[in-house]
Length: 120
Image (cartoon, rainbow, N blue to C red):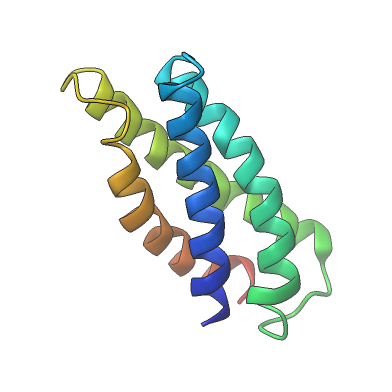
């Protein structure tokens, strides 16, 4: 429940930041994804580590948890970048198309990895 609320919030912040930056600020879609992701990772780490997964698993090794969180974030970033590139590049779609898999696919992947590997 906590992951869903926090993850939903962070996902909407990231997807919204991407879409606004790519659509209204005139930033190239892949560059907008980088900007949005930087914001999302910071917010996500703080909220997930202090609330979503609080009390789940050991917090004895902060360096290990942080490095794993960063690795999961890279996987998530690569997924979103792939969605942005394919949907706005080769398929020539509008900047909002990648928001759909950003909101419905990436969170499922990151939840599974965070729950089992980062905070497990």
